[in-house]
Image (cartoon, rainbow, N blue to C red; front, side, top):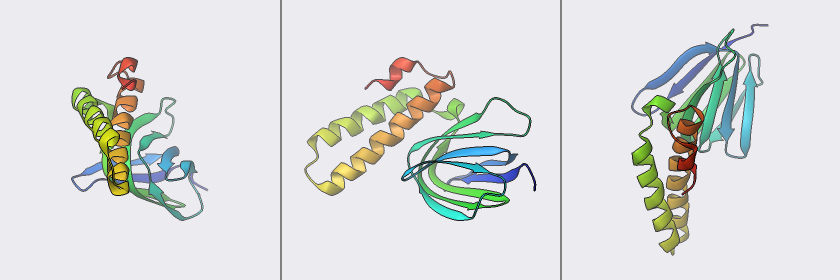
Length: 146
């Protein structure tokens, strides 16, 4: 059985990743999933969180911020269709801090369940961006505290 599988990460705007990888961790709606070559087929909803993957022979994982969408896992290929997928160096930390603050303020004033869900999603996406940027050295850990 092969040791690697094809990873494709696509947003509505662009293809973010197309590589052969050894392992992948992705944020599913009910928790993180670990994927290796030969994984049983599945489809899952993506949550906001950090994706990490390792290419063959690499010891350091590649990190990305991702939010919302779906993942299809096949034994030889995993495809993620995400609303947001950004490499740490692409993250605008100042904009993410502003979006997080706006979402938190809106969340505090939300009266409708739909608004609570929408603003929570906005907050989670902004917080994920800040966490990924910080873990990769592109932002201060102090950015994690609202």
